[in-house]
Image: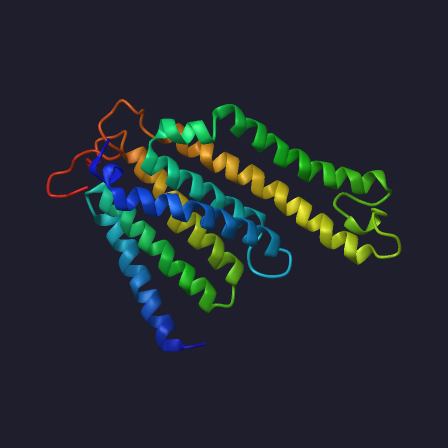
Length: 81
Length: 157
């Protein structure tokens, strides 16, 4: 356990989570969500759960981002609220 | 066709990278029994390779490599391999997915178990890859529209 790395990662995780739900532009929200997934994968590996971290990196940061962007291409790309 | 898809650098890099991504996916699937990885992660990586190709070369070109019919066949084949392996164990008197009960290699249930786990992982990987690719084809915009992404003010895509 490297506690200073843990604290830094969790801090960025919270920053990404708040930014993803408060930003208006949906493309930016998707990219921030992808960054959130990448940090979460590092946190999983840091917690000695390599398998879950692998899945998070492949699914969360990879496929989900692509599917969200492909869906966004069919919509307006801006949040109303 | 957007400017990203016309770029020679991106098209060449994608064409070179796709086989290596697929090779890495197969490594992850086979390596899954003994370490990190497995059928699901490997299948997702394999699907991502085809999705990358379809994103850059166009949906129509991607569907030439991976048609909807092939998608359906692969998705059901993987499930059949998984369920068939499990039922094979029941057939030889064990429980569902109790690999050791299959007398493939005499007097060595551990080795049989090792090979059958790989078979099950391959089945999972096939299904996951096919489903991921068909998901992408279903949500991606039709080819007639301009480019992959809508035009944003101030965002250069």
